[in-house]
Length: 194
Image (cartoon, rainbow, N blue to C red; front, side, top):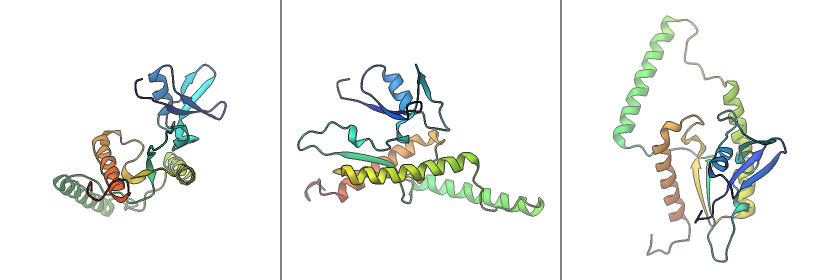
């Protein structure tokens, strides 16, 4: 490609990181996005590739640096509250829907014994995903300490769950806002540019 591109994956058979910097773009991306429990691994020869985040959630060490550049890292597993960038009307509609759903569940719990709205129990995949999130969070913290990016864009891990691909537009907007906030909070812009 004209702009250098790499995709990072993890080979489960060798338990090593694999950096795709040439060859099929499709295979590189497919291997890199094979999130355990969500997408099947990519089999290639003797290798079985899954998401690179398993071994390196923030592959800052793979960036070819030049003097005077600014390393920008996007951490999509930040442990911070999430505020949806939805418009007020969409929020209002969402709140009305949630209220109606809660009212309906309350009525059902009065009619059907044992159906009260107790705390949600973690299922097997929820437990596995939450555990992987915690592991990636710790790895990410250590990598950010080690590579000290010029700009760290923090997107809350609570922005969406693993299976909510349909919320792409909202999450892209959340990422854009997180970038703007990080840029304003940094000293990368002079006062006149802010």
